[in-house]
Amino acid sequence: MLTTLLRDRITAVWFALIAATLASWVLGVGHELPQRYAAISIIVIAFTKVHFVGRYFMEIREAPVALKAVFGVWNVVVGAVLIGLYLLA
Image 1 (cartoon, rainbow, N blue to C red):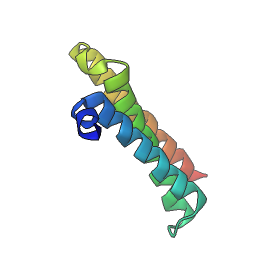
Image 2 (cartoon, helix red, strand yellow):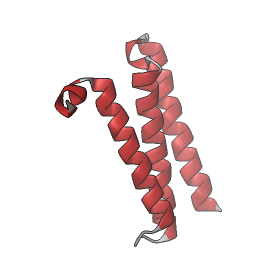
Image 3 (cartoon, one colour):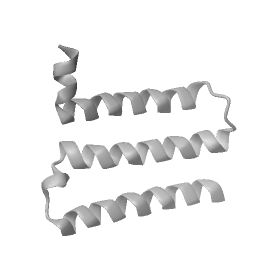
Image 4 (cartoon, one colour):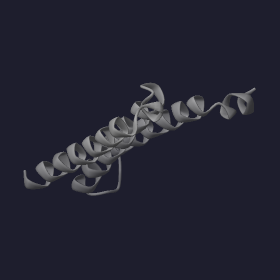
Protein backbone atom coordinates (compact mmCIF):
# COMPACT_ATOMS: atom_id res chain seq x y z
CA MET A 1 0.00 0.00 0.00
CA LEU A 2 2.85 2.41 0.77
CA THR A 3 4.31 1.94 -2.70
CA THR A 4 0.93 2.84 -4.18
CA LEU A 5 0.84 6.03 -2.09
CA LEU A 6 4.37 7.00 -3.10
CA ARG A 7 3.48 6.79 -6.78
CA ASP A 8 1.29 9.85 -6.35
CA ARG A 9 3.53 12.93 -6.61
CA ILE A 10 1.55 15.01 -4.12
CA THR A 11 1.79 12.28 -1.50
CA ALA A 12 5.55 12.04 -2.02
CA VAL A 13 5.85 15.83 -1.66
CA TRP A 14 3.75 15.67 1.49
CA PHE A 15 6.11 13.07 2.97
CA ALA A 16 9.09 15.25 2.00
CA LEU A 17 7.46 18.23 3.74
CA ILE A 18 7.02 16.14 6.88
CA ALA A 19 10.68 15.11 6.72
CA ALA A 20 11.72 18.76 6.27
CA THR A 21 9.61 19.74 9.27
CA LEU A 22 11.28 17.07 11.38
CA ALA A 23 14.71 18.22 10.18
CA SER A 24 13.87 21.79 11.20
CA TRP A 25 12.71 20.59 14.58
CA VAL A 26 15.92 18.60 15.15
CA LEU A 27 18.00 21.64 14.18
CA GLY A 28 15.98 23.81 16.54
CA VAL A 29 16.05 21.48 19.54
CA GLY A 30 19.27 19.54 19.61
CA HIS A 31 22.09 19.70 17.14
CA GLU A 32 25.85 19.83 16.84
CA LEU A 33 25.91 22.86 14.54
CA PRO A 34 26.68 26.37 15.79
CA GLN A 35 23.50 28.38 16.36
CA ARG A 36 24.13 30.62 13.34
CA TYR A 37 24.37 27.69 10.92
CA ALA A 38 21.35 25.98 12.43
CA ALA A 39 19.22 29.13 12.08
CA ILE A 40 20.26 29.66 8.46
CA SER A 41 19.55 25.99 7.72
CA ILE A 42 16.08 26.32 9.25
CA ILE A 43 15.33 29.39 7.10
CA VAL A 44 16.50 27.58 3.96
CA ILE A 45 14.36 24.55 4.84
CA ALA A 46 11.36 26.82 5.48
CA PHE A 47 11.62 28.52 2.10
CA THR A 48 12.16 25.19 0.38
CA LYS A 49 8.91 24.09 1.99
CA VAL A 50 7.22 27.30 0.78
CA HIS A 51 8.37 26.45 -2.74
CA PHE A 52 6.90 22.94 -2.63
CA VAL A 53 3.64 24.02 -0.97
CA GLY A 54 3.20 26.70 -3.62
CA ARG A 55 3.97 24.40 -6.53
CA TYR A 56 2.07 21.31 -5.46
CA PHE A 57 -0.71 22.41 -3.12
CA MET A 58 -1.48 25.88 -4.51
CA GLU A 59 -1.19 24.64 -8.13
CA ILE A 60 1.47 27.16 -9.15
CA ARG A 61 3.14 24.45 -11.24
CA GLU A 62 0.19 24.73 -13.65
CA ALA A 63 0.00 28.54 -13.55
CA PRO A 64 1.19 30.89 -16.30
CA VAL A 65 4.94 31.28 -16.63
CA ALA A 66 4.85 34.86 -15.31
CA LEU A 67 3.21 33.76 -12.05
CA LYS A 68 5.71 30.92 -11.65
CA ALA A 69 8.55 33.39 -12.16
CA VAL A 70 7.14 35.92 -9.68
CA PHE A 71 6.63 33.21 -7.08
CA GLY A 72 10.15 31.85 -7.58
CA VAL A 73 11.77 35.27 -7.41
CA TRP A 74 9.71 36.22 -4.35
CA ASN A 75 10.72 33.01 -2.62
CA VAL A 76 14.44 33.53 -3.25
CA VAL A 77 14.45 37.27 -2.48
CA VAL A 78 12.48 37.04 0.76
CA GLY A 79 14.52 34.06 1.92
CA ALA A 80 17.79 35.86 1.14
CA VAL A 81 16.60 39.03 2.88
CA LEU A 82 15.66 37.08 6.00
CA ILE A 83 19.04 35.35 6.05
CA GLY A 84 20.77 38.71 5.52
CA LEU A 85 18.81 40.34 8.34
CA TYR A 86 19.64 37.44 10.62
CA LEU A 87 23.34 37.73 9.83
CA LEU A 88 23.28 41.49 10.47
CA ALA A 89 21.59 41.12 13.85
